[in-house]
Image (tube, rainbow, N blue to C red):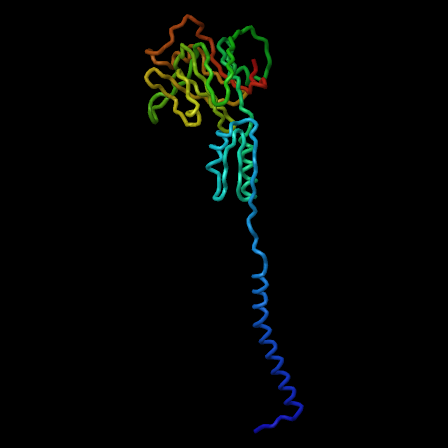
Length: 270
């Protein structure tokens, strides 16, 4: 049996003890870290309750609009013209931003109908200013958001006829007046024109231009402040079936144009 010198035995024992300490250290450090992590407090969701007083729109209208956007755990109730909100703080702030965007003043538009010797669309696009003795009659109609207004006079209206590839734009003379509604779609305003009043609950539903019996209905897309000329009396009559032509002694050179602007700002050139 090999005998180590006395000093060497002590050194070997010291190495073994050092190795044992290192092994115990590797075992105890992860355990200590794990214990430390477990002792850290778990972040809890912060809940809040807010009372929002609406300024412009009805609480019923806003409540119906935000319901599809409520996440789990969020509660909204109505108290007269106020909404009581409760839920996660971050999501609650997002909901309040949405409500602020919806609670805007009700809009009113001025729809202008022109009949006369001036082709207003071409006249607006013509950059050169020139004097003209041409005369046009102007009819203005205030239309409030979510409601219909009636133009108490006749006017030509474009109506889509046919099906599929055979569809084409014809024209009908609304002799007894027109019900007018306005629907914002992006940067455009969609003018719904009908012989019958469109009920409020149907205003958000996409409608197709056409004829139902003798009920006539059409839609015209307008840019605020931009005139659209439907055509002259002769052009419109030529595109109308003989059975529904307008019999008139008026000038065949009269043009029919439409423009729309906000009620508090003049944007359509007169």
